[in-house]
View 1 (cartoon, rainbow, N blue to C red):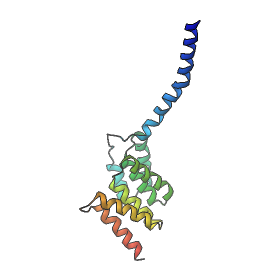
View 2: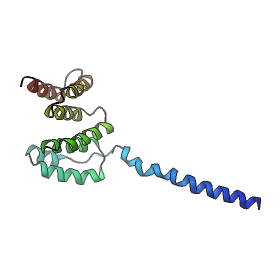
View 3: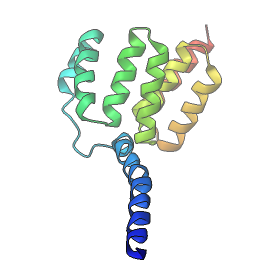
View 4: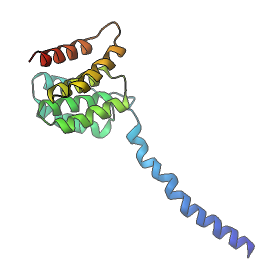
Length: 153
């Protein structure tokens, strides 16, 4: 009888603990950065041709298999170019969660803030790029130009 009581308690503990232990597994992928970067050549060609709808469709397919900062950054860029600023912000944020030192995401997020008139936040992204690029970089130069152009208007 004592043995049955122990087995019953052990079974009850397993039933209570198992769902909690496995619940975290479903969310683990959401926090992982893909180590195998997808080929974004075709997407970049579409963006260069200003085919944002085509680029976005391809990026959505890629994002289903690759949670990677470059993919999310380019999704943010294409959404911003189509005027969907709110969703664009979501993807830039996701890119920076996966890779906080992603220079392109800082630049494009800063440009989003410039376009939406939030100059303090644009300058925050400029400050982040200044730290990431102490000797200068294209992303820093581009965001500086965008902020300067907005300030003179």
